[in-house]
Image 1 (cartoon, rainbow, N blue to C red):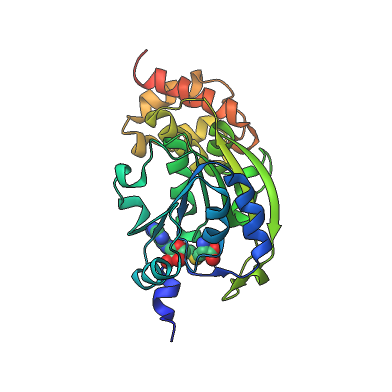
Image 2: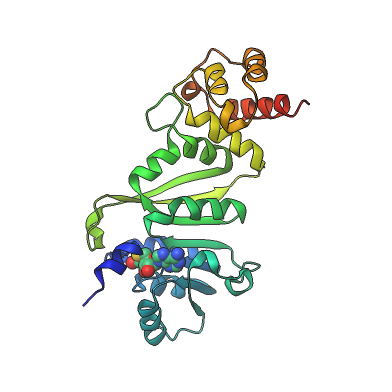
Length: 260
Ligand code: SAH
Protein backbone atom coordinates (compact mmCIF):
# COMPACT_ATOMS: atom_id res chain seq x y z
CA UNK A 1 0.00 0.00 0.00
CA UNK A 2 1.36 3.45 -0.81
CA UNK A 3 1.69 5.69 2.22
CA UNK A 4 -0.75 8.46 1.27
CA UNK A 5 0.32 10.87 3.96
CA UNK A 6 3.95 10.61 2.96
CA UNK A 7 3.02 10.93 -0.71
CA UNK A 8 1.26 14.18 0.04
CA UNK A 9 3.98 15.52 2.30
CA UNK A 10 6.69 14.96 -0.27
CA UNK A 11 4.59 16.19 -3.18
CA UNK A 12 4.76 12.82 -4.86
CA UNK A 13 3.06 12.61 -8.21
CA UNK A 14 4.83 10.41 -10.71
CA UNK A 15 5.26 11.03 -14.41
CA UNK A 16 3.76 8.19 -16.45
CA UNK A 17 4.34 9.51 -19.98
CA UNK A 18 7.80 8.44 -21.09
CA UNK A 19 7.81 10.78 -24.12
CA UNK A 20 7.98 13.74 -21.75
CA UNK A 21 10.95 12.24 -19.91
CA UNK A 22 12.64 11.57 -23.27
CA UNK A 23 12.15 15.20 -24.32
CA UNK A 24 13.55 16.51 -21.03
CA UNK A 25 16.53 14.15 -21.27
CA UNK A 26 17.44 15.69 -24.64
CA UNK A 27 19.13 18.41 -22.57
CA UNK A 28 21.37 15.87 -20.84
CA UNK A 29 23.58 14.77 -23.72
CA UNK A 30 27.19 14.34 -22.61
CA UNK A 31 26.62 16.34 -19.44
CA UNK A 32 26.92 15.80 -15.71
CA UNK A 33 23.32 16.12 -14.57
CA UNK A 34 21.71 16.70 -11.20
CA UNK A 35 18.21 15.38 -10.54
CA UNK A 36 16.06 16.24 -7.52
CA UNK A 37 13.39 13.71 -6.52
CA UNK A 38 13.82 10.86 -9.04
CA UNK A 39 10.78 9.11 -7.53
CA UNK A 40 10.15 5.91 -9.47
CA UNK A 41 12.88 6.82 -11.91
CA UNK A 42 11.11 7.41 -15.22
CA UNK A 43 13.16 10.54 -15.95
CA UNK A 44 16.30 9.07 -14.36
CA UNK A 45 16.17 6.14 -16.80
CA UNK A 46 16.20 8.50 -19.76
CA UNK A 47 18.84 10.77 -18.25
CA UNK A 48 21.38 7.97 -17.71
CA UNK A 49 21.08 7.03 -21.39
CA UNK A 50 22.27 10.47 -22.51
CA UNK A 51 24.29 11.93 -19.65
CA UNK A 52 27.89 11.41 -18.76
CA UNK A 53 26.77 11.06 -15.17
CA UNK A 54 23.56 11.56 -13.20
CA UNK A 55 23.49 12.51 -9.54
CA UNK A 56 19.99 12.00 -8.16
CA UNK A 57 18.80 12.91 -4.67
CA UNK A 58 15.66 11.24 -3.29
CA UNK A 59 14.24 12.04 0.12
CA UNK A 60 11.90 9.07 0.42
CA UNK A 61 13.91 6.12 1.72
CA UNK A 62 11.64 3.46 0.19
CA UNK A 63 11.84 5.03 -3.25
CA UNK A 64 15.58 5.46 -2.87
CA UNK A 65 16.00 1.78 -1.93
CA UNK A 66 13.85 0.62 -4.77
CA UNK A 67 15.75 2.75 -7.31
CA UNK A 68 19.08 1.57 -5.93
CA UNK A 69 18.07 -2.04 -6.46
CA UNK A 70 16.64 -1.59 -9.96
CA UNK A 71 19.12 0.84 -11.50
CA UNK A 72 22.65 -0.59 -11.60
CA UNK A 73 23.90 1.93 -14.20
CA UNK A 74 27.51 2.89 -13.54
CA UNK A 75 26.92 6.53 -14.43
CA UNK A 76 24.23 6.95 -11.79
CA UNK A 77 24.94 8.15 -8.26
CA UNK A 78 21.91 7.92 -6.01
CA UNK A 79 21.82 9.87 -2.78
CA UNK A 80 19.26 9.44 -0.03
CA UNK A 81 18.34 12.68 1.67
CA UNK A 82 16.73 16.08 1.50
CA UNK A 83 18.25 17.84 -1.50
CA UNK A 84 18.80 21.07 0.44
CA UNK A 85 20.77 19.28 3.13
CA UNK A 86 23.17 17.30 0.97
CA UNK A 87 26.79 18.47 1.12
CA UNK A 88 28.03 20.22 -2.06
CA UNK A 89 30.87 17.69 -2.38
CA UNK A 90 28.39 14.82 -2.45
CA UNK A 91 26.37 16.63 -5.11
CA UNK A 92 29.65 17.05 -7.02
CA UNK A 93 28.67 20.64 -7.70
CA UNK A 94 32.07 21.38 -9.19
CA UNK A 95 31.19 19.04 -12.05
CA UNK A 96 27.44 19.38 -12.42
CA UNK A 97 26.46 21.25 -15.58
CA UNK A 98 22.68 21.16 -15.54
CA UNK A 99 19.77 20.40 -13.24
CA UNK A 100 16.98 18.39 -14.84
CA UNK A 101 14.04 17.47 -12.64
CA UNK A 102 10.33 17.04 -12.19
CA UNK A 103 10.25 18.49 -8.72
CA UNK A 104 7.54 18.48 -6.09
CA UNK A 105 5.78 21.81 -6.38
CA UNK A 106 6.22 22.80 -2.76
CA UNK A 107 9.92 23.37 -3.35
CA UNK A 108 9.65 25.28 -6.68
CA UNK A 109 10.67 28.67 -5.29
CA UNK A 110 13.52 27.20 -3.29
CA UNK A 111 14.87 25.26 -6.24
CA UNK A 112 14.79 28.34 -8.45
CA UNK A 113 16.55 30.41 -5.80
CA UNK A 114 19.11 27.61 -5.49
CA UNK A 115 19.68 27.64 -9.26
CA UNK A 116 20.33 31.43 -9.18
CA UNK A 117 22.73 31.13 -6.31
CA UNK A 118 24.66 28.32 -7.94
CA UNK A 119 24.57 29.80 -11.45
CA UNK A 120 22.99 26.56 -12.59
CA UNK A 121 21.00 26.16 -15.78
CA UNK A 122 17.97 23.93 -15.37
CA UNK A 123 15.16 22.09 -17.12
CA UNK A 124 12.26 21.93 -14.70
CA UNK A 125 8.70 20.73 -14.76
CA UNK A 126 6.69 23.21 -12.70
CA UNK A 127 3.08 24.11 -12.04
CA UNK A 128 1.70 26.00 -15.00
CA UNK A 129 0.32 28.75 -12.75
CA UNK A 130 3.72 29.18 -11.14
CA UNK A 131 5.36 29.57 -14.56
CA UNK A 132 2.73 32.18 -15.45
CA UNK A 133 3.71 34.13 -12.34
CA UNK A 134 7.38 33.82 -13.22
CA UNK A 135 6.72 35.29 -16.67
CA UNK A 136 4.05 37.86 -15.76
CA UNK A 137 4.62 41.35 -17.13
CA UNK A 138 4.12 44.67 -15.37
CA UNK A 139 0.55 45.92 -15.38
CA UNK A 140 -0.93 42.41 -15.34
CA UNK A 141 -2.61 40.58 -12.49
CA UNK A 142 0.03 37.93 -11.92
CA UNK A 143 2.89 40.44 -11.66
CA UNK A 144 4.65 39.86 -8.34
CA UNK A 145 7.97 39.73 -6.57
CA UNK A 146 8.57 36.37 -8.29
CA UNK A 147 8.05 37.91 -11.76
CA UNK A 148 10.40 40.80 -10.98
CA UNK A 149 13.15 38.58 -9.59
CA UNK A 150 12.84 36.01 -12.40
CA UNK A 151 12.94 38.70 -15.05
CA UNK A 152 16.05 40.27 -13.51
CA UNK A 153 17.95 37.10 -12.80
CA UNK A 154 16.95 34.45 -15.32
CA UNK A 155 16.39 33.92 -18.97
CA UNK A 156 13.38 31.62 -19.23
CA UNK A 157 12.30 29.52 -22.22
CA UNK A 158 9.01 27.65 -22.27
CA UNK A 159 9.60 24.13 -23.59
CA UNK A 160 6.25 22.33 -23.43
CA UNK A 161 2.96 22.19 -21.61
CA UNK A 162 2.34 19.02 -19.61
CA UNK A 163 -1.25 18.10 -18.91
CA UNK A 164 -2.02 16.88 -15.38
CA UNK A 165 -3.15 13.53 -16.85
CA UNK A 166 0.51 12.63 -17.41
CA UNK A 167 1.04 12.11 -13.66
CA UNK A 168 -0.17 9.54 -11.12
CA UNK A 169 -1.87 10.32 -8.86
CA UNK A 170 -3.36 13.00 -11.10
CA UNK A 171 -2.60 16.39 -9.53
CA UNK A 172 -5.09 19.26 -9.28
CA UNK A 173 -3.20 21.41 -11.79
CA UNK A 174 -1.41 21.30 -15.12
CA UNK A 175 2.33 21.71 -15.50
CA UNK A 176 4.87 23.07 -17.89
CA UNK A 177 8.49 22.27 -18.67
CA UNK A 178 10.77 25.28 -18.86
CA UNK A 179 14.45 25.93 -19.36
CA UNK A 180 16.10 28.54 -17.15
CA UNK A 181 19.52 30.09 -17.32
CA UNK A 182 20.85 32.51 -14.70
CA UNK A 183 21.76 35.94 -16.03
CA UNK A 184 24.97 37.68 -15.11
CA UNK A 185 23.06 40.31 -13.13
CA UNK A 186 24.08 40.57 -9.51
CA UNK A 187 21.51 41.71 -7.01
CA UNK A 188 22.49 42.18 -3.40
CA UNK A 189 20.60 40.73 -0.47
CA UNK A 190 19.54 44.24 0.53
CA UNK A 191 18.27 45.11 -2.94
CA UNK A 192 16.31 41.90 -3.05
CA UNK A 193 14.79 42.74 0.37
CA UNK A 194 13.77 46.19 -0.85
CA UNK A 195 12.26 44.79 -4.05
CA UNK A 196 10.31 42.42 -1.85
CA UNK A 197 9.08 45.28 0.27
CA UNK A 198 8.02 47.39 -2.71
CA UNK A 199 6.21 44.44 -4.30
CA UNK A 200 4.33 43.74 -1.07
CA UNK A 201 2.65 47.08 -1.70
CA UNK A 202 2.41 46.65 -5.45
CA UNK A 203 -1.04 48.21 -5.79
CA UNK A 204 0.08 51.45 -4.11
CA UNK A 205 1.86 54.47 -5.47
CA UNK A 206 5.61 54.45 -4.85
CA UNK A 207 5.51 57.22 -2.22
CA UNK A 208 2.78 55.48 -0.19
CA UNK A 209 4.46 52.10 -0.46
CA UNK A 210 7.56 53.64 1.10
CA UNK A 211 5.63 55.47 3.79
CA UNK A 212 3.71 52.35 4.72
CA UNK A 213 6.93 50.38 5.12
CA UNK A 214 8.27 52.40 8.03
CA UNK A 215 7.92 49.52 10.45
CA UNK A 216 9.63 46.94 8.22
CA UNK A 217 12.37 49.40 7.34
CA UNK A 218 12.84 50.47 10.93
CA UNK A 219 13.08 54.10 9.85
CA UNK A 220 11.13 56.92 11.43
CA UNK A 221 8.19 58.30 9.52
CA UNK A 222 9.61 61.78 9.24
CA UNK A 223 12.69 60.59 7.38
CA UNK A 224 10.58 58.32 5.16
CA UNK A 225 8.36 61.26 4.31
CA UNK A 226 11.40 63.11 2.98
CA UNK A 227 12.60 60.07 1.06
CA UNK A 228 9.19 59.40 -0.44
CA UNK A 229 9.09 62.97 -1.75
CA UNK A 230 12.55 62.77 -3.26
CA UNK A 231 12.35 59.34 -4.87
CA UNK A 232 11.72 58.93 -8.59
CA UNK A 233 8.35 57.75 -9.95
CA UNK A 234 6.70 58.60 -6.64
CA UNK A 235 3.25 59.01 -8.16
CA UNK A 236 3.30 55.77 -10.12
CA UNK A 237 1.68 52.55 -9.02
CA UNK A 238 4.31 49.91 -8.38
CA UNK A 239 2.71 47.10 -10.36
CA UNK A 240 2.87 49.26 -13.50
CA UNK A 241 6.67 49.56 -13.28
CA UNK A 242 8.94 47.11 -15.10
CA UNK A 243 11.55 44.96 -13.29
CA UNK A 244 14.49 47.23 -14.18
CA UNK A 245 12.62 50.29 -12.89
CA UNK A 246 11.77 48.46 -9.65
CA UNK A 247 15.42 47.50 -9.24
CA UNK A 248 16.37 51.12 -9.88
CA UNK A 249 13.97 52.23 -7.15
CA UNK A 250 15.34 49.64 -4.73
CA UNK A 251 18.86 50.96 -5.38
CA UNK A 252 17.78 54.57 -4.98
CA UNK A 253 16.01 53.71 -1.76
CA UNK A 254 19.02 51.79 -0.48
CA UNK A 255 21.29 54.75 -1.19
CA UNK A 256 18.93 57.22 0.50
CA UNK A 257 18.41 55.03 3.56
CA UNK A 258 22.09 54.51 4.08
CA UNK A 259 22.76 58.21 3.55
CA UNK A 260 24.88 57.77 0.44
N1 SAH B 1 10.69 12.99 -10.75
C1 SAH B 1 9.76 11.91 -10.52
C2 SAH B 1 8.99 12.05 -9.21
C3 SAH B 1 8.24 13.32 -9.03
S1 SAH B 1 7.43 13.39 -7.47
C4 SAH B 1 8.81 11.82 -11.69
O1 SAH B 1 8.88 12.66 -12.57
O2 SAH B 1 8.00 10.90 -11.73
C5 SAH B 1 8.60 14.30 -6.50
C6 SAH B 1 9.70 13.43 -5.91
O3 SAH B 1 10.57 14.27 -5.13
C7 SAH B 1 9.21 12.34 -4.97
O4 SAH B 1 9.88 11.18 -5.27
C8 SAH B 1 9.59 12.87 -3.57
O5 SAH B 1 9.81 11.84 -2.64
C9 SAH B 1 10.86 13.65 -3.87
N2 SAH B 1 11.19 14.73 -2.95
C10 SAH B 1 10.35 15.58 -2.30
N3 SAH B 1 11.02 16.50 -1.60
C11 SAH B 1 12.34 16.25 -1.79
C12 SAH B 1 13.56 16.85 -1.30
N4 SAH B 1 13.52 17.90 -0.47
N5 SAH B 1 14.74 16.32 -1.70
C13 SAH B 1 14.77 15.25 -2.53
N6 SAH B 1 13.66 14.63 -3.00
C14 SAH B 1 12.47 15.13 -2.64
